[in-house]
Image (cartoon, rainbow, N blue to C red; front, side, top):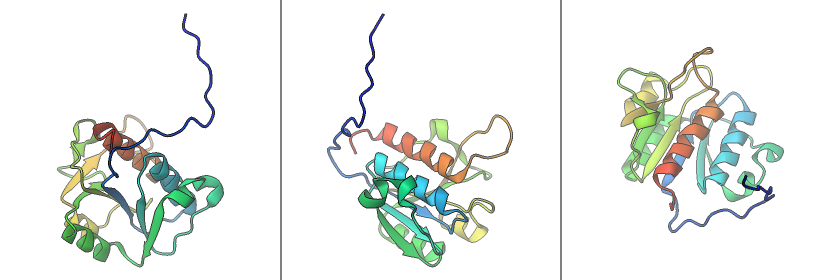
Length: 166
């Protein structure tokens, strides 16, 4: 039988190139959710998160993500999406919509902006008009959707699985 020994604070794997994914969040109701997204982004080697509204990162939750991830703050999401599209990002909404693609078979392009909606309203019709594609995470029970930071973590993990070296 194999022997396992816990490795506390194992150094992160090195990326051969910077990750070309940015997370763009609509105004979130909970700074706890944003802080968890920042922590996950840091763990994934993502260096840029955009948050709209009046966000605040809670250091005790975000941990090193608060220091290693740049948080850009904007008033509203649509102008951000327009700018990201002009910068050559493919805008991928994370939402339950018609014509969405199951995350299990979703192929991310390398230069992706993952667009995250509000906890209650999701992505608005205006925001959905900007996205190029929509990824959806299947739900097999109730409630009808995952928490916003949980869903973001799943999508970021899938992106990193597809691009393990950056």
